[in-house]
Amino acid sequence: MEKNYTSTRDDKIKISAKDAIKKGFADDGGLFVYPQLNQLKVDLKSLVTMGYQSIAQVILEKLLPDFTKVEIHSSILNAYGNNFDNKNITPVVDVDDFHVLELFHGPTSAFKDIGLQMLPQLMQRVLDDDTKVMILTATSGDTGKAALVGFKNVEQTGITVFYPYQGVSPIQQLQMETTDGNNTDITAIKGNFDDAQTNVKQIFNDQAFKKSLGDKISLSSANSINIGRLIPQVVYYFASYIQLVNKKTLKLGQKVNFTVPTGNFGDVLAGYYAKQMGLPVNKFIVASNENNVLTKFFKTGIYDRNMPFYQTIAPSMDIQISSNFERLLYYKSGEDTAYVQKLMTELEQTGRYRVCDKVLSAIKEDFFCAYSTDEEIKTSINSLFKKSNYLMDPHTAVGYKAMRDYQKIHDQTPNILLSTASPYKFVHAVSEAILKHPAEDDQEAMQQLEEISQVPIPRNLKNLFDLPILHHDIIETNNMENYIKAKVEEKFYDKNQSASN
Ligand SMILES: *Cc1c(COP(=O)(O)O)cnc(C)c1O
Image 1 (spheres, rainbow, N blue to C red):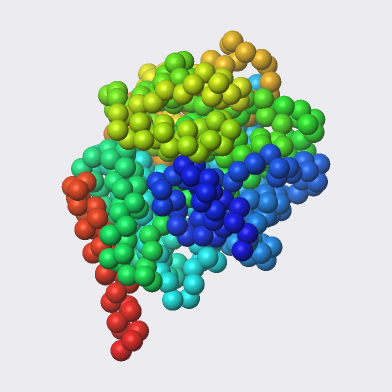
Image 2 (image 1 turned 120 degrees about the vertical axis):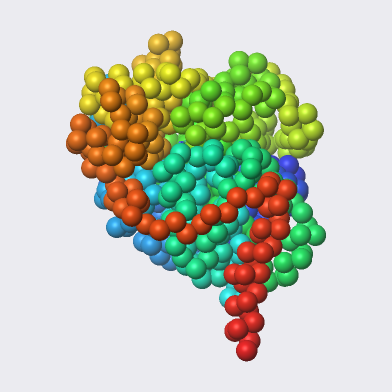
């Protein structure tokens, strides 16, 4: 099997795409990456007549070379069909003087669906008949539900989701707590998202724990550290560009900017993959909320997570350690894995690192970074709705502000703003921004918004309030390993026994 992937921290590691998806993380604590991405050029012209699914076929064949064409084709058919409420899967709409790439038309109304409808398809085609995998997921709200929906009742898999107690929106929490399926578990942890993510990473690196599960049971990840989640996201950068070419808004080959509301840096990194593969991109505008570790990095070259953690009205971006930034450091250091290893060790030990000037300026060639406070988020939602009658969710609004900041001081390249969630998912913040008398109750607030915006409430959110709550757990962060062990036993061991009886 071709071994195209390596680790960000040790380029002696060589691994196939299939094994990388199965494992999630490299054993050295690094992330799997595809070296020399610019050798994978896509013929842009050949995409012009294609729809989303065909573009996905072209991109995934290049980035997942050890999957057969048939495996990729059947995965795409299962992942991107009627489960999305728009035939373009990720439609682009014109708003004011820019374009919005709507990524929220999937089953949970957040962009995470694009990766997480595909990952279980790929995972199923990777597992041997007698093996099982427990998917561990740390979530700031949206990944959790999207991963649960993607993996529920998928044979040979179980999924355990950890979310920060009182750190997600009430609707996000309700979405997770009402999940059915025979292989799903969800628990709040008494900590924030970074605690959840750091502990999950430690569990992946705990070789003794992994051994204790037995050699037929492995752990994997549904976070964007898993290439099987990240790589499907490359597709919509190409697909949105092609939509605009077909509308004659862009000339083939003309450059665009993409603005990306950013937390773990997975979404925008997928854009960088697309650029390396030949998509004509001028800049990526990286947008953070008040947890603005990245904005400070762009000013100083110092990544420092030793700052207060803020709970904002864009909670899916309440993150201080952007995991996928490690992958960017790999590419921008000239694929110098010893250098990345050194920086990541510093980050683990001191909570900060400084990159050399050469790496910082290489990053700035492709990326610009800005942030929004909660007040600015509300102002953005309000002013764009008044001006153009377009309703943004708070995460998209973070991007909107950064895009305007960029336009003020830089070029006038056409802009595509990625919209990462339906406004109904964060109905509380959105209705506070645009209504004089917002309803306290989320269900009522949704109806108010539907009336004034005429945008239909997505079905999965409309039905939510009638579903029974099936999950209630809250645990301490130091109890996560025990929790997983118990769930593995419950989900996998009993079945093994009854199968052998
Ligand atoms: C996850 C998420 C983001 C951040 O995406 P990353 O890939 O983590 O950078 C932004 N907006 C919403 C609504 C999200 O769910």
